[in-house]
Structure formats: structure tokens, C-alpha cells
Amino acid sequence: MQTLYRRLLQLMPRLGVRVTDLAPGTALVSRRGRYSVKPAGKDAWLVSRDGSAGGWTSVPLGESGARLILGKASAADERKLQMAAAEYLGTQHVAAMLDLYGVNCVLDVGANRGQYAKRLRKHGYQGRIVSFEPTEEAFARLSEAAERDPQWQVHHCGLGREDTTAEIHVGWNTMNSLLPASDYGRDRYKRFHTTRTEEIRVRRLDAVLDEALDGIEDPRPFLKMDTQGYDLEVFAGAGERIADFVGLQSEVAVLRLYEGSPPMSEAVATYEDGGFEITGMYPVTREAATGRVVEFDVVMMRSKAVQ
Image (tube, rainbow, N blue to C red; front, side):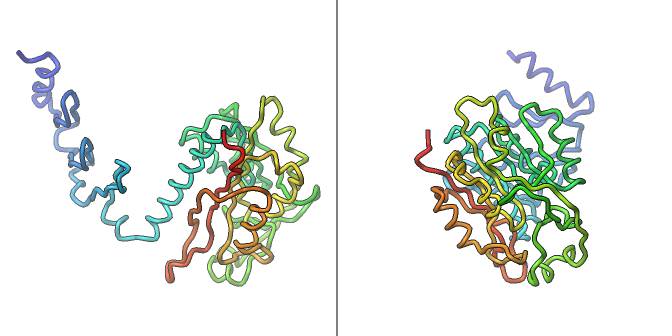
């Protein structure tokens, strides 16, 4: 005897909708002819509109059980695909480290419009985020992004080696920097050809840490830095309080975009001297013509602090 559920599904086509069985107890109900379903591996289907599923390929990711669904355009652009995958995997790795080390406060230095914090939330991090952004336009967007999140604080300042004021190059979108562009940077990015500056407030990390951690019992902070060549200055401003951090993330340069920014080897060695060890490295940008990596996001944790 048919169940009422099955009888209703059989009735659907008469009402002008399409029913596609996916698995026992699971079906796709759509307007007739507008959606197609293509198998994408065991217990997985690709649902696409107007029959556009024909150009998609399902790729297994090793023995993880995960699969990557590629369209023709994405499969053809290796560099773009690699960058998108690196961003996703990097954020996923950070989220896993935050959980493993019991992080309950992320200091987001160089927050721009809050992109990093939003990605952490999407990957499940629910603890406190304290974001620092010095430029007027980006800070306004950051404040708007954080206003409905009670666990997300924002501060209108930059961080550096000393408490001071400074001129920052703006108009470079997500690449605003306290450092001038290098010759290589100007060759790579047209946005560096014109610039204006904005006066900002700069504070030391050790001067703002107590406020950032206020009210957290047994604080276990994580330091994220993306300051366009200025990360070591932020790190220096932590002084002895850097020992409070269980981990960090920094953008390190293989090919320097800014004058005076440290090479990757110097940055990593400095962080290692502070007691941190590499758990992951993910390319941020690559040259299309040569395939060379320009910058990496490096994730480092204090292994002795694991819970």
C-alpha cells in the first residue's frame, strides 16, 4: 500500500511541478523543466537550473569523503581555483586550530571591512573577535558589519611598535599600507600608481590587550595580522605580552609589494623566536605568468598551549 507521502509525490506533476527522486525518503520538487539533477558521487547530487549541469565534474578529495564540483570555467582557470581553495582551506584550518587550542578571543588586526571575521563565523567560531582598522572608509563598513554581533568589538586604530600617529596610504582597496609600494608592487598593481594619505592613530598591542580580553575567564587569545607589510611592527608592539597568545596568523611576503617590508624568512624566524610553530601555509596571491607565489598566509601555534 502506498504511503500518503508517495501518493502526493505522484500527484505533483499534474499540478505543474517536477519531482525527481534522490534517495529513499528524499526528492527534489521544482517547477517542471527548470531544474536538472546529476549524480555527483555516492549519496550526492548536483542540482542546477535550466539544464546547466552538463558541464560539471565531480572530483574526490583523496580519501576524505569530500568531493569538489567543478564547472568548465573553474576547471580551466587553475590559478583562480587554487586561490579560492587556499582561502577556504586556510580559514577551515584556522577554525580547527581555534577549537583545538580553546581560543576564546581573536584579535583581528588589519580588519578592513570585516571579511576575516565573517569567514570565521561561517566556519563556526563563536568566541570574541576584536577588530582593528585605522582607515575611515573601511572602519565605517567594519562597524556596520559588526553591529549585530555582540561578541564582535571594533576599534578605530592601527597597531604598531609604538603609540603614535602616522600617515597611511589609502585608495588601494584591501591593500592600504603604512609602507610605500615597492617597484615590484607598482609593476604588479595599477592601484599603487596613485595614492593619497590619511592620518591614523597607532597603538601598541600590549596597551590594548587588557581591554580586549576584559571579562574573559582564562583568556586564550589568537593574533591575526594582515597589515600589508607591517605585521612585524604589530608583533613587536606586543612586547612580553606575546607570551599570552596561543597562536597567530600572518601574511608573509615571498615577493615584496611594499618598501621596507620583511622577507618571509625573517618574519617566520621572528615568530618562531616567540615560541610559535607552523601548522599551515596557504598562498594568498600568485603571478599568472610564472606561477610564483607572492604572499602566503602562515598559521602558527604555541604547541605547549594545546588543551
